[in-house]
Picture 1 (tube, rainbow, N blue to C red):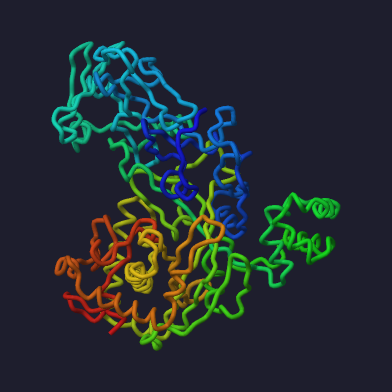
Picture 2: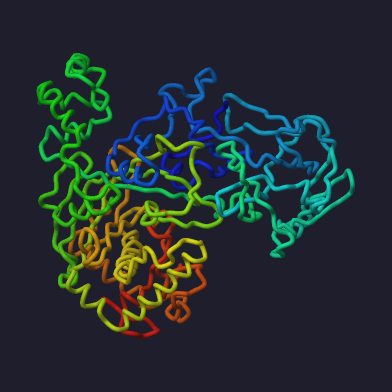
Length: 616
């Protein structure tokens, strides 16, 4: 094993997780499944609510969340140090010589792996037998740009031999080349040729919509080193290396809500990672004798006796103080905390402060809650390819088998990351919301969104088609969150991609009662969190000004009148009304629902007219 590069822990959840392709300096690599990870160098993350929600989806055997393995302190670039990190493997396995265009697999022996222990970024494959090389350093080889993938999460190498021979018996052995003619890089300018029989074919044929040219999916999961014995019924599609539809994560996240009310209980919760494995009071006594090795436990042992600490550990282990809500309901406890900030317990990772509503909007909003400290834990459940069919709300409700697993057997742990930061919580008054939602125009708009929702699920074969429709209340909250996010990034000092939304929307008759709130927050993996720039904008006067400016900017879009006249379509490609990249869409890292269920006409009046706006 050899180190090849570095990525952040959060990138292993949302960007380069298990089963995804990562672009290294000199090759493309696939992040391998959890069976290949070495958990000896992983740190445990404690978040009971998130684990309980994941167990509802993946089974009770899933009991732990781990940070990705990290290098030991002081190891540096020592070539003798153990290889610690996330395992990857070269993929696709077909590569092309940059000089003579020879096309071959890494297992064929045509190409040779050259490693540099002191400069891992220089690790590469070279073509030592290149006929066009005139001595000196052999030419580097590159990963080919074409792959096959299907909607069931399978990924495999492009079938070069069968493709160039057009289904006929391929030559054995076959000498292939892949040449590009022209500078455009278009598939029609790329030709694969077999020099054993002179057969050749343009790559544009791989993207033909003719059913006779469709590829059969072999059911290959390269990250698991597994081929499905029963095969796959889905047709495989040719995709480009690095395409955005090659990997869609299905992740869950939870905010850390303190459960203990007393100081001892809070300290035990904060240090549960160190205390969880203590089985007797004698082990507690041993820890107290060696506090120099456990610096984080000094405040706990300096204020409380060993007996009190042991009693608190047993109470925590027996589930004392757990929430009464359903295990899979991640947002209800959070909503209850934000709705009653004065009675919310405070901890190292959680602190709330109530202030007045945004100035000028007192009749529409409840008091603003400034979230001065917050911790979020994010875990990767699985992934899909070609199409994303799950977001936060649907991750615990998927009933089909399209969620590609992270290991060959049922997982006992999942990769996770934790971030700390700050935020602003806004809550709309329930009476105003009910009066607004009862307008006849809103009922018609809700019917349009429902039809679009059904079409979206039908295209992805998610049954029943009308399940999990969030309603027009959610469209309002979601559109408001995007409008505010786009506005406040101008002043808060954070980029648009670093401010996230968390939506709380439920109808009065649903389990847990009605909800109508939005949390806008930013977080960083640093143990100290962020710098406070977002909380500063929660001042009633400042927030009122930003809210007013956000609404004014939505009245006119650069894409009007096309944007204002856009209605939720029934083709299944998207679920949004009057909105576009110029006015409402947010970065992928910021939006909880993939830029769906958005419509600026529910906030303000637009060119299309109608009486659907909440803010008159």
